[in-house]
Image (cartoon, rainbow, N blue to C red; front, side, top):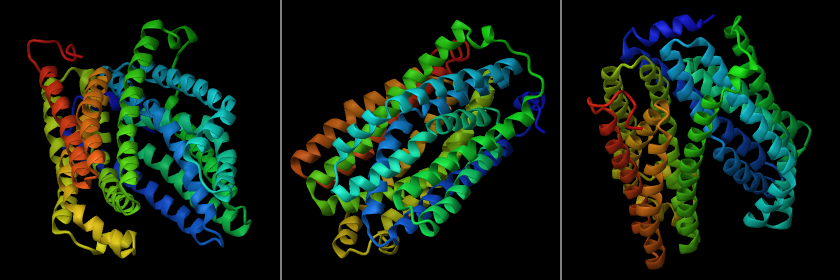
Length: 451
């Protein structure tokens, strides 16, 4: 059992490098289980008699990703606020933060369930698809949507455990969910022949099992923590939570929109360009799973050190985290510059797509290099609960840098320029957050006053 007192004590002692390495390792293992489970899902659906089941699930998954990504602040906001309470040694506030975030998650989940029909109709109206593909997507949607309360609650618990520097608990949660998803998909898709509905049902039940694991882990840590509703509904704390979540929501929507526009503009250029860029983005996402391991560790430790008021340790953490992020990105950058065909052919066998992807592969080097720095800064600022800085940096990078360059690339039908817009987007995110971090460490200001 891991007591809150142990956590508080460790916040001010111990080797920062070892703590960072341990958290990063656990986070990476947790992150890797997500794409592995997705690969199994794809393989099971892809080997059915008709391909429209796989296409329909992919279509419906876009709706869920957009909705759930928008509520990602439930994880990100909870991590920073919890970690800062841990750093201050405020056990009661650690638990009250969880309760407030869960209440918000349940309200949002209720809204999703009430509005599920309009969400479904709007989603398929915008995405479209052949009738049999749309029918499969609707079946998947109708099965998975009922797990919304569990899914949003899991976001909160993941953020809370990360804020307590307990990545092991987050690993258990994701491990339970992804293992259950694989087993249930095999039962529902292969054994019971439920196809797309079975895939949605498997995902929904796996989220419920993940929540059950979270509740068991929470129960072992709760002990006898006194709290009353008046403390949970404290106006100042709720205002801070809503303000932070609002800023993270705007930041996340801008980020998702940038990648959505990149994909849409690729499609408008040509089908081959779309396919090639999609393959290259898969490698970007693979690298991101590793870099995010360090970014999540940065979130946890930055919040705790912020709570203790240790400005010097925060500086050391920033340097350590940035070096680690670049170290994870460099092998992928080297691979991109060498232009090997084998990794591309693992994802596609179409000769024209492979040739096109190889032509633009070197662009992954600047995208991944600057992207790794941006991801780490995201983790740092989330731990500091500096939502306004994150929001402003992302809006400036998206609207002021990425969008004009990407629009010009579309006008000229130049995919090199489109990739340059993505690289510039990552550079702008890094530069704006670096600038914000320098003002944060200004010795003339109390810790965190610049935000």
